[in-house]
Amino acid sequence: MRIRASVLAGPNGNNACFATAARSRWAAFKLNAAGDVALMFGLITFALFMFIGAAVDLGRWINARTATMDAIDAAVLAAGRALQTGASQEAAKEIARQIYLSNTTGRFPVQNDTINFDVRDNGTTVVATGYAHIQTPFMGLAAVGTLPLFVASEAPEAKTAQNSAANYNREVALMLDVSGSMCTPCSKRDDMRAAAKDLVDIMMVNNDKTAYWSKIAIVAFSGDVRPPAGLLAAATDPAWPSERSFTYETGSKRKKRTETVQYPRTECVAERNGDNKYTDAGPGAGNYVMSTYTQDGECVIDSGAIVSPLSLDKTEIKKKIDALMTGGGTAGHLGTAWAYYMLSPKWNAVLPLASQASSYDTPKLKKIAVLMTDGEYNLEYDANGVDTSDNVAGSSANSVNSAGQAIAICNEMKKSGIDVFTVGFDLGGNATAINTMNKCASDASKSYTVATGEQLRAAFRDIAIRTTELHLSK
Image 1 (cartoon, rainbow, N blue to C red):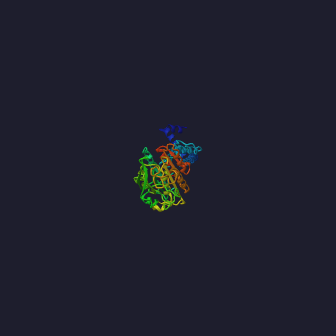
Image 2 (tube, helix red, strand yellow; image 1 turned 90 degrees about the horizontal axis):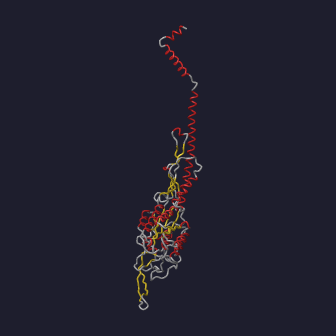
Image 3 (cartoon, rainbow, N blue to C red; image 1 turned 90 degrees about the vertical axis):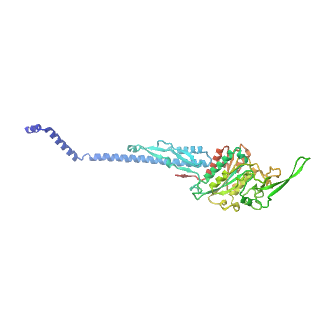
């Protein structure tokens, strides 16, 4: 006992004892392995929990993303098809939206879904816009709270313009009315130019980038049609005189007198008569088109409105459209006939090689006529090539009015396999004009009656879009 007492009572005895005990306990703790398994189990369990949670989050994300992208694809394709069948751009966007909503009803709940749809590129492309995310509660523990389902940079587009996905060529005859009424006011002419160029842009957008192409002919008409000089010579009868003389009586009964007038041959053409008057038979004996004769020897149609046969040159075609001027009456059957001729292989012998039409039965080829007018067809020619309204003229060479002749030619075009679209612009409810357009079109869905310049452009864009392939890009 004294020994114990002396130790406790020695200098710093209490501190030395505590230090010795602490070192002993720490050494024992270091050598004790009893808690290692529990610690390692806890760490592994946490890691497994995180991996499983991340897998669950990723599985939900993949499922939701697939549903989202599939719904977008279906939506833009449906909207593209709607545009091809005559829907307005606003209607097409609404169709896309409804298709998207109906295809995402069973999808996992998402955050911030702002996905919507737009129509671009003159109505040729439907594209998805906006974004959407899904929550990731497990990955959120690692500061990844959401994953994107869709971002605009990966937006799929439904393109309707001609491109590498298309699988056919097109030959198009675009008949344009340049009669005097198209300049009352002249904004109508300007609207027509803009609409025609829209169609050209859409149909020929990738002519130089793919194996497939679109060729377009421009056929302007008013009171007559003006072919290029070489084609004029080949299409008209060389036996017809350069000038015709007409004698008629004038004055009252008491002071009646006889006058003789000269009518020079013009550089323009009228209809043809005979057995093939409404067909695409090539020009020649018995099948020539009539020359026209006027008192001043001038054509009715402007010199800038020369027929432009099929061409691949988009720039040149648009220049010809911009050069179109207006004046004269509305001999719509003549424009209709020449649209037919420009698509007919039977006229190849009198056309440059680059402008020759393919055979009607050529694989992977569509032939399309687009016939546009702003009024009733109201002008015919007699057997001498004189406008029947002229006081020296006889009766109509074919005894059928212009509208009737146009419908007969349209029927022959359709028999040849040509798809005929018609556009009546600012017809003012004229029943005869509307009836002519309806009967000429291949079917009711291909006959457009529009009142404004914007509606005219929309009609031409619709026609261009409806005659193209539809595919998804991106």
